[in-house]
Amino acid sequence: MKLLSGIKKKTGYNLYPIDIATIIYIIVSAIYICIGSYKLENETSHFISRLVILFFIFFISFINDKYDSEILKFTRNFYPILLLSYFYGETAYMNNIIFNNLDFHIVNLEQQLFGCQLSIEFSKRFPQKWFNELMNFGYFSYYFLTFIICFVAYITNRTKSFKVIFIVTASFYIYYIIFSIFPVVGPQFHFKGSMATIPDAYFFHDAVKFVQKIGEVPTGAFPSSHVGMALIFLYLSFKFLQKLFYYILPIIIILCFATVYIKAHYFVDVIAGVISAPLILGLSTLAYNKLIKIHLTDNRKVIEVNPFKPAKVNSN
Image (cartoon, rainbow, N blue to C red; front, side, top):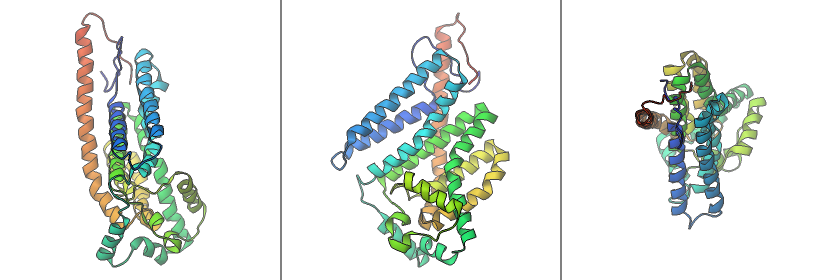
């Protein structure tokens, strides 16, 4: 039986580990919204969105247990990737429940460690348009790396892809919980005027500005999930997709510098991103190992309950 084969059952829902991780995040974040309701507005819309997502998860799980379809399999594995942008935006809604923005403390720490604000000095020291464009290219690539890692894994090694997609998604969920509890908005939102901007460049400079305008919100600077997730991408590609590793390695090196250059992060955020990456990778891997063990145990129970009726096994 292939990993996560999705054994068919006459009734019930065959939830994958990625489904369970998403459900847990939805429940945890909903509880957090309830705790902070005295500070928040329009909670109803966030609860409704969660109910819609939960309905979708159980519905597609039920349908996929009835029909063997490549489209359903793909949707079941990639819908959490599509939800990441929504959940990220929500952290700006939830991130001042316990603390108000902590940027002042990060700025002070950076000043004490380096004697300056590296996010401001970096672009001042390297104002050349070609360098500016290189940094923006590196930063812009992040918006595609998440999907590329998961998609390449899915089409090249279906069995290993379930673990890759789970670790990527669960790691983002952990970062989002941190962002919601410890609000840091980053230099681009904290500083004002020229301190918050970088010189103009070419295509990728404009592309990053456009994406930031429609998708960036004041949240998620500490620790840098750009750096943390980039390192997790490197680990996953080296372990499971070695050919891809050598393509994305130089891009990720540029990305790590770019987060500071374009003022998305303080350098302290980058250090925290490097430190947090192995910890969050370890937690996500541990969660996957626990959930996959439960999943396979449950599927074996289905077979034991119906010993004379062979269970249908799809190719997933």
